[in-house]
Image (cartoon, rainbow, N blue to C red):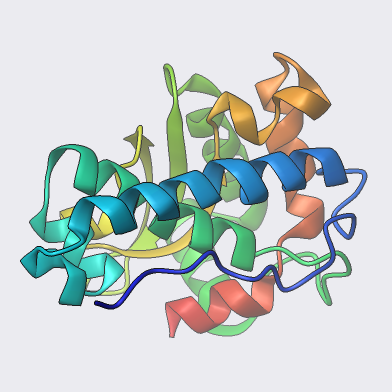
Length: 194
């Protein structure tokens, strides 16, 4: 049986402070994400799903299996896109051009992205994704949904489940969303776009 593993963070637990505290990282990664990994491994043991990729499970399953697989995929993409010391504050190259083409400007994109994250009712994710033609779209995905279920390629996501921000921002979700831009590693997002 192939078991999924908790991803190793590409930075120390305190590297994203003050945007995301060490305390939040330890709960979010070490408890919430670890729980989804354990749950999924227990659910798929002895089934045909145990030999599929995470993406395949998200697309082909439903119920608890899809929820746990979706949360693992979403969190992996989320945690891997940050850096304590990003090399740049905005995308460059083809991604920057596509953002300008599809949203008018980088600032207009950020405003729409934050608004969609702030106005998503309940728990979920706000995503920047590309369709098969390379057009960029922003989607709100509830609970554990991922844009791959709509045939999109996910590029950037902000987690708006309360466990992602409540220890640091309490009920101030918009403040959390606005702060996250400081730690986005645009090199990672640009590689996803390619």
